[in-house]
Length: 279
Length: 316
Image 1 (cartoon, each protein chain N blue to C red):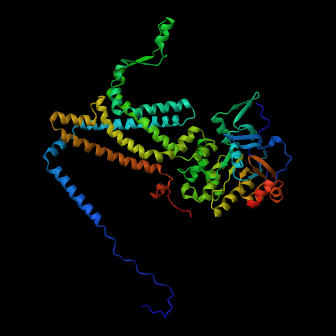
Image 2: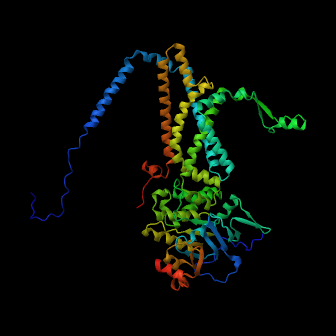
Image 3: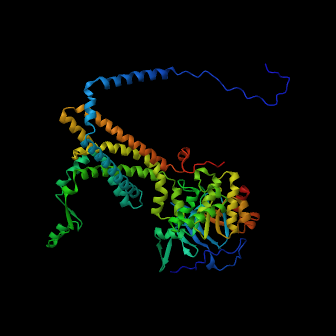
């Protein structure tokens, strides 16, 4: 095993929210991407992404559609395979095992084990429609972690309360509004007690008046110290909650910095063009 | 005329509309025609003595007929259970990334959909010609290999007499079940493909295995698409059990009814009895299908309309 980093304790987030000291040792990184490339056929969507996310950091990724930000997010939990480069989460190489200078593909079972420490929230919620909100949240802890049902149920109800939906436990997804569904989806991801949460445009499919509740739930999560990567168009959320802001365009990171810096004083022309359209 | 000088605090609700409804003379004409035709049909049933209703009633419920009914039900249920289970396996194979598995499933489906069930039934009934003794286990081509090396190898673990393995019932059952599996494979495949790919991604992102995802997430949702055509298949199967008379399976419903008819030279009443029996059995199947469909509509719009499980609609 020549893994370059030691896995940090996943259960210890870096204290309360707020910018973490920038000069942390590389060994403590939650996500580390090195020259990540990805193509779909002849179309190159990621052209060498280098990024680092520290534990407890909330990183917002913005950019025009087709810039590769969602694809990058999906690479982090191996829903997409990367073509070249390296990607580590919590000290583990994603999707591969490196041994003797060679890469070995992980088995489905090992990939599944890696994904347990990464929660994902989708743009279109992807709740299981044949299960109630409560059953949606309980499914993975019972089937994947094989935890006893009673304890899982208590925790699931607590999670529902945390996202403000304790009265919707017995409702099916089709009976919930989009914003309620997305908050159930957040609770479902949290039930696996992940070390890292990925949000893929979590509010883009919502009616405008429902966006606030979802962002509030995400903000609470950030305040509790969760490490989050959020692909979003909500600049207000990025400014208020984000520790760092990444602007991507055409498969590359154009600019990275604190949200205040990037939003107030973008260094690159492309960033300025994009922000002038969305702000 | 209303008094316009006094201020009216609130406009009175106007009286409910009473209008003369549109007349539909065409509908009444159709009803009359149907009534006349029905009366003629009933008249024929009652007055034509060739129906021999008393003979039908006396003979349609004899013990051998009832045994035939049970055989038919057993064949239908077993063939469908095997067909559905094997069909699910074939559908998953067909959707596999492995080209060999996918190809084998395609080939199977191609063969069993191409050959008529009647031909299959007769073919399986005559399988005993191929193997008087069926060898189980051991090395393939053991005899040929032994000849090459000049030694006598018997790669057989144990043998079964084809006539005990492939009794008429087993042969008929296999013919029906294997053929059904091919059709069910296509139905299940359509069901699996109807499920939003985001469901598989969400389950995968939660760390569920492929098997768990299929068993817990994909198939339950696919069932809503799978069940209605499967009901169709079950009804078709109930009727196709009459084909095993050619295997031959003699204690099956249609064969028994026909036997009574030919023995007594009263063929027609027994054919009517067959219609009645199949109508009764199919009606039971329809009731079963209704409950199965209701079960798998959990969480869907249709399920809520029927007020199923915690169906309180409380969202804005």
